[in-house]
Image (cartoon, rainbow, N blue to C red):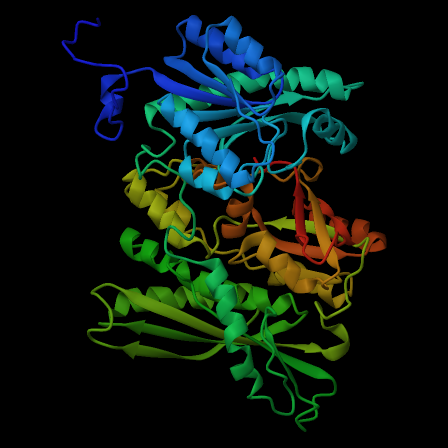
Length: 584
């Protein structure tokens, strides 16, 4: 009947796994709903108006009196009630899946569906089932209907909205597809906000449906166009944490007078008094680190003058968070074939990092190892020692308290963590490190992509040591691998948490991180777990010292962010870093 010359018959099964999108057939949508189905009307209107190339094949409900079934009948859409009485979740969801498949459904939408679906259902419709939530997830996940809007208003938010996300077994935790925002005005009520958000939900659903039909999202999405995480790039943060736990017993077996060989802090502590060397309360603090795969960017861009600064920064910043003044530094340079000019450039960068941190470069090792490294490749390692009086140590158990203020100081860029993912992004986008960068640097410069990404890690020694000496700080946190969520808990006790209020803090993503967010499609949690996102150092101060600390930093030209405060942890299983609002 369509002039294609095709032959069909009732009950015929259409293969949807062989170039079916090329046929431009309307997308077949199945809807699960338990309430009025207001968002369904927006989809129907878009289909009838010709702006959405789809058809609603089936509306299914777990309530036989659900108004969404009447809405479907009114528009001539097949609809069905399936009773859940006496059935387990898997059994019920199996019947739902059978009904959807019988109607050839390609994409399932949950519109006011008042059931938590089973793992088997999530597996059956993986990347093919979307839900809309009436808030800007991940905030206010798990809430329903008017209660969510009341919570948003009570939290003092200036914006709300809706989120369309893929359905997974963990409620409201699937990958985010679309978010739409609206302003919250003075005198807003839960009902008025609900009306605003509900208007956005249909628009968001239609946008998500078009993305699915175009192959931007869903099982047919190009593998090179989907979200990409640090783990996808080959780095598993969880595995790193597991390794630390695994090797703790081996390290503890090396205990001797002066140290307890504990792991997990930013630097290792050694008590000179305890080992008989008469330190008069002096504690040595040791830190070691590298530059990671940022070195690959330096080698590909042929820019080697900054990575030495990075090497020093990654070590000495870990010393000052313990309150220690950096004293000396040693480096390790390894390569397959020694190139004098290149090596000298790298070491000159190390010397510059030591000058910036008032730290003596007292020695190092240059290792030439043919066949160990490809031509032009090299690796770096650094080791630094600082000193602090025991009474002045920062970050010790019980040093921070509920009510203490959390301040943030800016980073200079990506610093030296997350570059496995950065390189994956550059590779996927087909960019040249020597071509103009698609983003400006934090100080507004237009550089090549390589130069912009190689902006050296900021060294905080000269800025923060005066505050440390004046005993104005209770704690410091260097934001490195693992970002905010992994590093801040290192200074907290088990019953404490940090609550960060993004909107009121003035924290904005610098251009490089906005670009990375766009390219990776990472949600806020994973983004801030992978990158520093513009915050390189966290300061924890008592409320009565906040003004003095901020004034001192601002006198040095520093824009300080008041991020939040230390709070009591909600429970033993609750997150220790709670971020209110959306990073943007």
